[in-house]
Length: 592
Image (cartoon, rainbow, N blue to C red; front, side, top):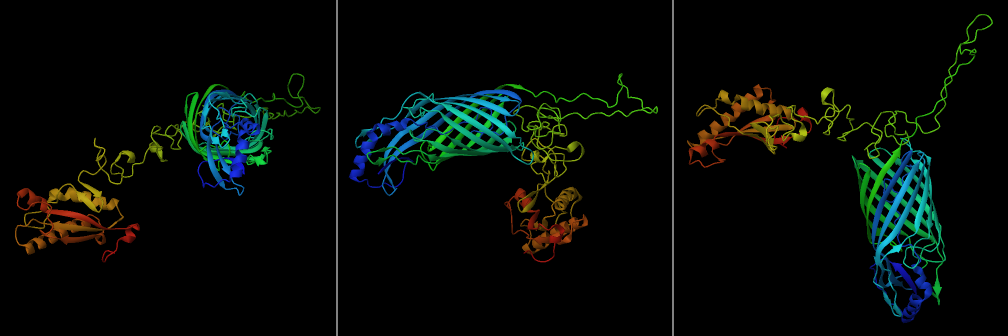
């Protein structure tokens, strides 16, 4: 029977009495207690100043720059113990040997000559605790309180700079100094080493990196020996903010399994995987970040959840020196520097020697951002490290149009000719831009009410109607339209011209209940026909219109009052069919 560090939950399996006794002997043995010589914290923060939380950057981050900061990590239930039967099924859970672990990292890094970055991580476990699980032979004490962790020293070299099309490549090496407490799950008590390969790219708005490493350590003690560690992440920038997902994890590949009396402590210290979602924001020289992670395939050290907080300070950065060139020289020059005379009295031709290539990475546009780090290497741009696109001209509103060309640099807009380039569009041409226009498809005046700003005063499209806020007036008991209603009908005509998707519009006439129903039906139809003819004469295709009369059958107010009867004498415009074919969709015949 095995004793397995594993995740919570799962099917309980009956444990044989002989297995329980063997398990108890193991738990109380000195060799089992020696498993506390394990650096349980599996989250290794990227060097301070790197963009992501768990996947290191491929570039150094500057010609010469310093970064300092803090990273806090809280892991919930990173080491839970359960038994395992001989068949490999999950058995009884004994409890959380380490129920929580909070680690604070004091970090610093320096970028050197745009290719080398060295870093220091001084971690300490500020608090941890567990359930002190009980086995048949007694309790296993959980660690508690403060403990030092192993110091990490690292260096990274950018072997291949990223380009617009190809990712960059870097190699890194870390050494872990055994300064931690091997009795408190914070150290193996031995030195560890970790070579790492990194690839990544930065496209301005989006950047990514991925890495794989082999951690070499003592495989005869603790729960870890030689591991393969991996990480990958991608993030998007939005001004001073960034957000994106990452994954990181490990797979144990070499560890001797301690034994006691034939009972084996599981050799599979486990692979583990964590997925996090993180965000960072830059405020001048300071960058703050927060992330949350979930553990999957939980081996030793992989919690069920983790949260991370970080703050980085970028106090100093020195720009690269300007490129060096050879002095200009001439061929065949005389002692005075003038061209030599030929024997026949001719003149020698001076030849200018081309400048040699610079000894350091170049800055083509001269904006102090090296081409390897410049998102716009041929345009003078913003050199700040927290710029949305470092080395590109400013674009405050993030609409992809640089401020120098943007006529509305504080509001996102679209490409346009002349003085409207970079400004929000105005679809209906009423001088009110679409974001501020309550009716962006219909021209209207400016108002102080956001609900009516830019909407027509008397006519607007609402759902399945063209709503008129005034009435079409006729001569009494006749179908003759009064001239005062012509401007209102002109607005209805303009709406139809600006909405070719309206393929069929019903012009409905209504009356009050005075007089006979037959005469009112005839009058309402005649008035609807008069309105339809007016619209046709104003240029509306007759195929889009039909006239209907309903007389007094559809009142909207009480016919017992003058005000109610006035409301019932009305013309309405009902949208009966729309089309995405434009004029090709205007056809005679019944509505589909």
